[in-house]
Length: 112
Image (cartoon, rainbow, N blue to C red):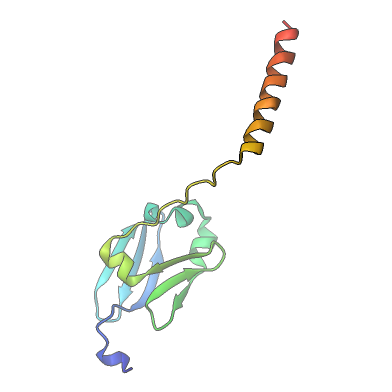
């Protein structure tokens, strides 16, 4: 496939500020999204944010230290990354935590 005729947006350069992710596209457009759209990047250190590489022929950006990927398409269409939901606790874990809480409460009450 000839990339010169490809209409898919491609990133030429990336900058990450304390508030935004800014990408210069090869066709001259500049796009930016709020940093908080990527919870991994917003929680990363400035050094981790600065360590990235372009994916493919500029279709996206990869931050290896925090395992985050953003695509030019996603940035253009405004698709923020969702934080994963915590895994549900098993019944055994729930019972064990309940027993620990009850024992702690009983000891606290005895000391009164």
